[in-house]
Length: 176
Image (tube, rainbow, N blue to C red; front, side, top):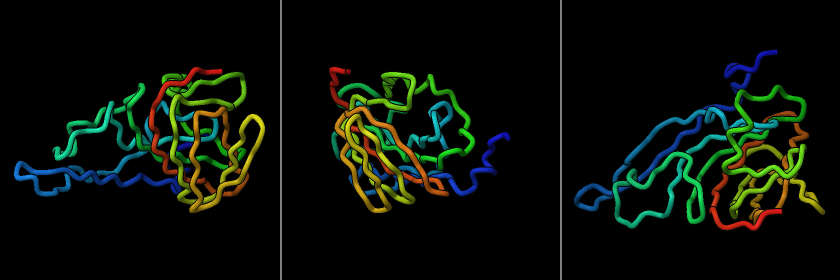
């Protein structure tokens, strides 16, 4: 079965609104756009919407757009994404798992991985299980998780995609 955007109609584009300042330092809407899944970020049974990233936090006031760098990474960088974890057994979304190697470090042939970041996660919709080396827990809509660079993997045993809002705060990581 071929997985197409129509097959994933329940995972719509995400609206991103970015504010900034005009030359007189008045607040403005600098960008109001729709973002679809980022090509190449799909792996296992998840896909990501790369919404906003910057190598470092901007000095304010600013125009709201100058600091944005797509796929910023490295210590001190910040990324905002929406991650969709599809139910177990769903067709894999299109993408190249190798593209994730710059931000996600796999440690074996499983979905276990770690990121060199502190990740601030909120479950926007659905339910997921986060599995660590020595523990696991189910997160439901409205739950928050602070992921401190631990090895982990995600599972969705439900019948609908789970949507997570994630802020990645990149830092140093000595690895495993």
